Length: 367
Image (cartoon, rainbow, N blue to C red):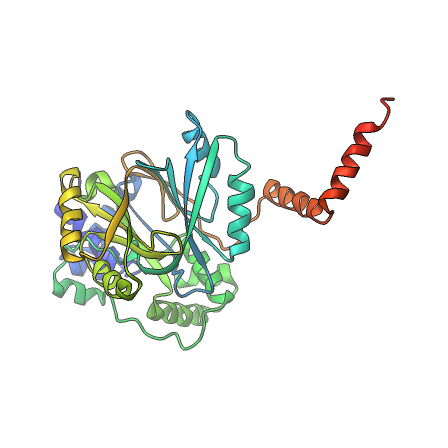
């Protein structure tokens, strides 16, 4: 179990993930060494962790997709084991309802997404079917969620949650490369980042300030769900009138329970994931949603049984941290690539020609 100082420490790192331990200690009214030692204990036990990733809304043209997977009976965990280290997979959830797995994936292009779904997932033994929807807009996501244990004065000491600023220009490949280095250890020093990137410390510091001001880096400080106070995760799919979607998503995004809110390309144009205190809160939350937004119709829902991967972090059934799978915008798979090339070769030949070639092969005498 966590005590109050643990919760305060996690909240402080949610607000200021790269702040030095002396500043974090001052915000918590403890010595910086105590704060660092506490954090080491939490991370070693897997009860809390830090991570970061590019903000898909700001870095390049990253595509967010939600993929529902139906598994062959008895093959679910084998499928999860096969795809766990796939960098594009942000989340892997074993869920209830009309799907076995719900995957959140991030790709550079629709071509990459199509290759992954069609040839990577489509070629895996144990997968019976997939259904894919694109996020047309991501209104809020988990990096903005807070435990809210700190008072205003403590948040002020951390210089936390500054207003977003315009980065001045589109963020390019060099910025993304720096974020990917940072994602391997988001508290690594400027000097360490400079050494690994080949940039000067001054350039790294300037770029980090620019990325932070633009909120191009999504930092996450998480606690294991079993000790977070919010152990229940539910995902809802709904239909909202197009003219009301902007208003509804803006208000839902500000709700305490909301971890994710996105508009989708499919027949259900709204998706939200909420964290709740208990299973008993599921129905009252949905009832409150219906009362507040009578024009929104919830058409499907799923409960998360095991979040095997969360924002690139591999978790056990209790939500404790096991290891990290760093995000990368580059994905390649030899088997998927070979299968795609073979299909393209066949597509270059008209169907009649392929049939004739097959007939000639079948009529050859046996040597």
